[in-house]
Length: 397
Image 1 (cartoon, rainbow, N blue to C red):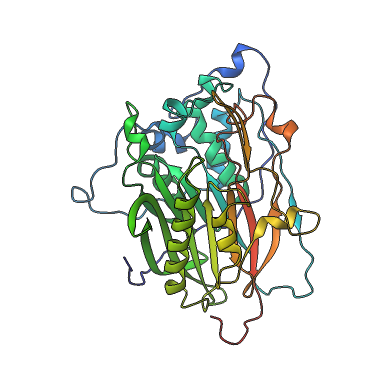
Image 2: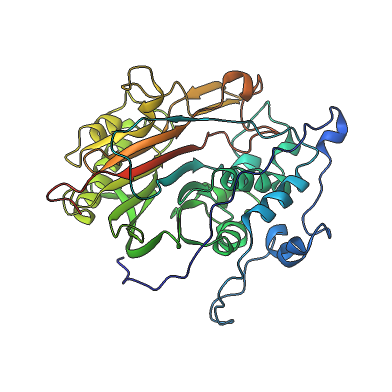
């Protein structure tokens, strides 16, 4: 459903990256939980109810909406690291930068794509046989997720498998200057798990200091004229600095082998929707998602050959610039080890340039027990890219 333009308030300034937390001691003490809201700081005393979770926010019809009280992202990052002080330090990843003969007059747009692993699925359905149960505890795992987001400070954040939108991500990220939209799956598998936190779905956040929302569309993907359980969000944003427009979409296609034709049909439906929203490719496009499809699948080829002139940003990491990374997810389940490339950031090659891409974790950093782990909160790696607008060609917004 399209929404009319709305007035947005200013957001945050990206802070310098704080120092990494010290390495935790080995042994049982490394799994001790330091709960939020324990009086560590005034920030957690204010956020204790939100961060501890367990209850849904007050319904809108019972309380008048209030502008969120801003918080300093550096302070929140310090608090997350205080909670995580007994865990191993976060793995460091560098950016691969692209030299350009056409420097932009505006700062790049940083986009983050991440399947964060729904809490109900991680604990109740996914059977990560090498991952200790303690590593999946939400009180700490949410701090690992927030730490990853805060470390890279994306301007646009696209997430999948979000089942703590209303009690964690929306309240916190809104106080950091983001505006968010959430679209749950119609039949989320999270609801089959006892003590779930509601359905999982896709979420899209953008910094209000950098963009204003022009339109928003919630899409339930179809396949062979039938509605499916997969969804997408597509929003047209206007860059405040340049007045250029960009459409950003986030999706999560059907999982599992044997569903390749369904994923292909879902991809076709999404592309058709995006053609209408971008007026054929008049508006530059960025599509983030867990496609659950290797580059050899038809849905990948459909995106690569689309009339929307899309390219995959993470080819930048390959030696020839033509190959996808060797993996974006690596896990061990009861069925065995699974190492695949499933996550992508697609972009309009005619209107946008990739300036940098975040390197993936190495096999050594991931470790023999794979993901998730005490060090990393999801079975999927986050993808982060910096984009800039090309000089505006004729016929492009």
